[in-house]
Image (cartoon, rainbow, N blue to C red; front, top):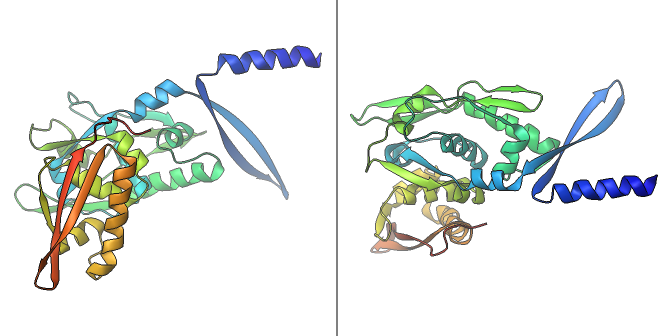
Length: 274
């Protein structure tokens, strides 16, 4: 009997060789007793990779001038939703998926803690506003996410309509194309922001960023320059080791004072980083 069961188990394993198995640990309380139940979720590896290998398009103005306080995880979730926006769309559509699939695509990890952290990040996105400067110089508040709906691990997401001018019907020359795999591979918000900013600039050109512009980008306006430098060095290291972009920079001085950096970026010969 046991031999017969083992044969069938082996057959099932062979059938799903091309699938990835993730384990979601669900913890629940019943009175004073704590039980642990394992929910096995099967993913098609090719489908997950296809979703990671998408590109996304944003308004260059949104990338360069929006001042937001998103975490690395929250920015990745926004970019995931933007990968579902097509160039021909005239409106945002509801995205239906699961928390487990979100965690798999975005490499957020598995288990109950990862599940709860992603739910928390979605709540934060729905509550967070950000300042954006319009083409006429007026500043206004934008939002990221309309109300998410979650039930039994499934989730419905929709980008907030405030983002429509920055994601829909973009004019050539005023938009930036990003590789979502690069965004996923970067774990630091400073590296993600620098990557997106540089991607919005022409490659192989020298870009000057003043000390205040770097501080603004990293939201470190309150820090002295020497305390901002470690964030810049780490962002450079992460971008060069984890993405399709290669960057280098040098500081620019007037007398003994640093006034900014000259930064160069180019695309690596290898198109994708696993």
